[in-house]
Image (tube, rainbow, N blue to C red; front, side, top):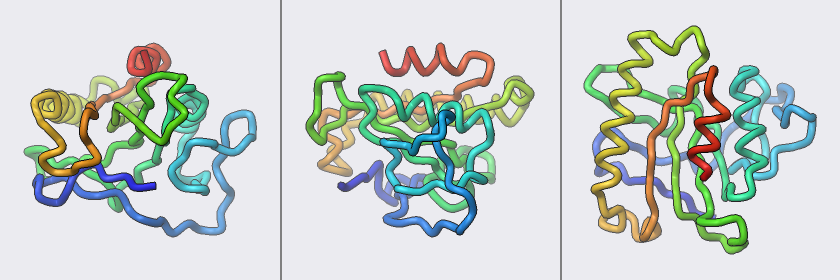
Length: 176
């Protein structure tokens, strides 16, 4: 399987890793203890997810339209560069099939998603990230991604901030 979001030529965007190094710590699983089925990599360290992020990961992993998801690692993987010096490392990147009956290796939407705990919802940092993601989503709507990556033909890309107090409702809207 290949997954390419964008190339280095887009300034501030980079690629996902081809492989990840994992420690021998406990493996993260769905909330019910079963293994994730749609994670891009076989193993995710339990320490890489907080309780809220594990809830979100479990939820997205069980969606019928899920093609794959990836737990983006801070300061190591995909990032967005806004106008402030610090890079924004979103928590999750996932791809959805166009509909539930699509069993082929085909996806239609890519989401870059940052989760925010209730205590961070109104913070200055969250407001900044929300602004950057809104701009990225607006520009993504206007972009023909095949100009950069042929595999992105007929694909849409969105950048989303998901707050803890409304995460399930927001994800349901994204999956609709």
